[in-house]
Length: 458
Image 1 (tube, one colour):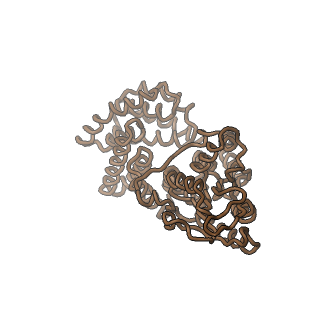
Image 2 (image 1 turned 45 degrees about the vertical axis):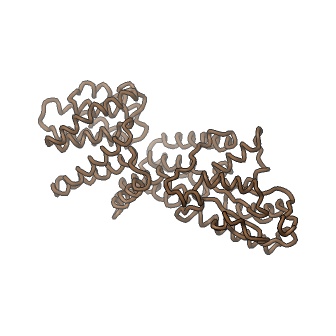
Image 3 (image 1 turned 60 degrees about the horizontal axis):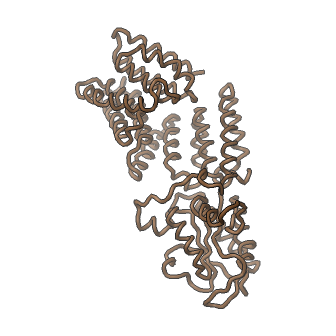
């Protein structure tokens, strides 16, 4: 595994030899780093970087703050109550709720304000680590890092514990040249994954993607962007077993992200093993409880309810009707949370037409111009985005403008990057066609759905 794919552990500590003002002990911090801290980080499979080791040009403070804000892990040495370290620890605690590990030499207790922070102590003899003390520090740090990598996330920042609604700071690596090597590696990896996904047949594409994953190594040590790129590549290949296995192996902080949880629920629903659909619903509802409604989360929840409706509508009309209402509600909530995202809106309309009663049709008529406006703003039938063109097709069929739907069909086929996209649109069109069975022109909707299903099957 190349170092550019690994997670970083930034070390915030004094450099060189510094004197502790209380004990008057001269401490060799370089020896502490070289003999205890760096070996512990390397042993866990992460990349250690200390502030004075930055190789980027420009202002060193920029590089240091970039690492504090963006590094996956930070170790902060609070020994001697160094004001720079404490200031930087405060910056980190404001940016990230977890993955910050304070340490201190047992020359005295940390200041009162950070006594609440669970810090790792280490022992110095004449201002340096003995072999035994170094081994003890390596073991303690290794255990803490492993626990953070493998366990569910737990806040270690007093700011996030005191203010649960505080969102922290979200930044991208692309915003700073400090992470240039990682941005470049991510672009190379995306190219490799894209090439692998395009291989034929699907089995060859999946094996090539798995080979890339094997080369990357242990998922729990991989940088977040690398993990998500691999995760979405599996999704593009309908490799739901691989998606779920990768999610389970992710470090806790990545598993806690919205995109990881959303796609985990997506994979569970598509695989649909015993109890997995219920687990998918629980995952999405938990995310909504924490972060509120969003187009993506509510859209995925609506899709699960829609699948349950489809499966039950020929067996239990009462239960099917309840799932249909649940699906419509989830899609409407998603669209109202983010009206610029037309995807949940068009799904809501399709299901309202499927329901077909007076209230449902009135709600469909209310939503239709709003969803159409959102799609038109994104380019409408001339868009270069599959979902925008697919939305135009679905709205055209709802409005019985079959000529417009047919004109958009060819464009949708060349824009569909993943097989399941065409299958999703075809499923929505089948709902419309089944509801209007026997109506003049409805065979044109089925013909469009046939083409999309054939494309999805290739």
